[in-house]
Image (cartoon, rainbow over all chains, first blue to last red):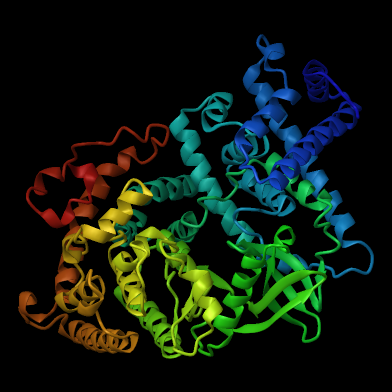
Length: 192
Length: 437
């Protein structure tokens, strides 16, 4: 198992931002490893019948990935946005890969229509959501950023507000409207 | 796509509408959108999703991905083994229930979509759960009614127990209540269909015992389907004895507190009239947007159900006529003997009211323009008058409020005085227009 200190990850993230081409390739396996660690924790606890303290687990995962101390003197807000964008990219790639594996050759092909029709509100399809979010950015970029930071980046409402330099109330309103907008988008029947 | 300016307007109106009580939203939107059909449609459409969006994307993506991974790598239920269950091909998970997960699946023999309730693999050794799971299926499958979800098959494949039911595309009444205010007409339509389903079930000796908005699906065309007879109990004399011991252990309190009858909350023996009480709770909520018995905690709600009288319906929902209020009150009587004695009776009362309500509406429409004293005709004219007043004042408010509309960054700063505010003195009907204080 590959290990890597939060320090290195932070460095890689900053390198990715400055256009270093190999940074993402080196980052993705780290996020993936963290995801697997998290998944194993879920399985262990679920088998044992424990109630999950999911928030704590997720926070732990992000802390392990990102060393906030390292960037104290950097542009912290900018860094949060960056981390969220990175997480979005990796998690969406991860979902795409998994869907592909699951369907395999000759298996029942889930049509686009069905995929959207059954997206449940608690367990949204990350791929469809990613597409919808890209569209939202065209309508209202800041709302898309709020969603990216909170949903993909795991930031709280307050953190997202600080990162974007807006009032917490504004971030809250953005979030609420964006959620309705995205849910509507995911509920739409594709035109064909 | 909307222009930036109109999108900002949509945003402002959307948030302002959310601040208002559901029953005043319609009038508010009429004046706020000021004839701009495109803005109005966009706001309406977004608002209709607001209620359903509550839990949406609140779980971080990282957790969703990790859970997907966990379910895939969990050796007790690898994805390939649950991709096919007997003749069913699972497409996607659509829900979670107490006894198992629900999937959208395709019955490959008939090429039709079904909802497949699959008992969790971890519980295959749990005989009580299995009996309960199967009992649910048996109970529901004895019923054949357009307003009750049809059971296609009960089975077991690869050591997994399953129930295949008709797949209903629609939204739960919970989502509908959250997204918009129900008109009296829609409320009556939902309630009569629900009561019809219950009458059929009661005739077959089956009590639902868990009537709540989550268990009612409203299809796009308005057809109501009652779900989840999961904790239903057979009451006919020749009913299976095993069903009885599973669901009526002394003191075992099932169901959701706010919709429970007092006798159910006490864990006492219940009969079909417990469902009638729950329908009363639902009617109350559909008509007023508020539950009749509320409390901070589960036990507070239970206490309210047991001892408190619900608030007078017309005090919080003035549009509700005396006749309809009496129907709801009769459902909500603490002692079963004082309620409607059968779902059929309740259905009759609702239909009778619905007919007179429809006639009144027609009359009210005819009366518009005629010189009839509004106070004597019907509550409909009253409502129309109130709305007219609302629109007038709201129109004034809109003019005075508009200059602030773009200050979206400071939503807390509500203009407290506007040129029209002096006119609003003692008109209690428009207290919802809070920005005119």
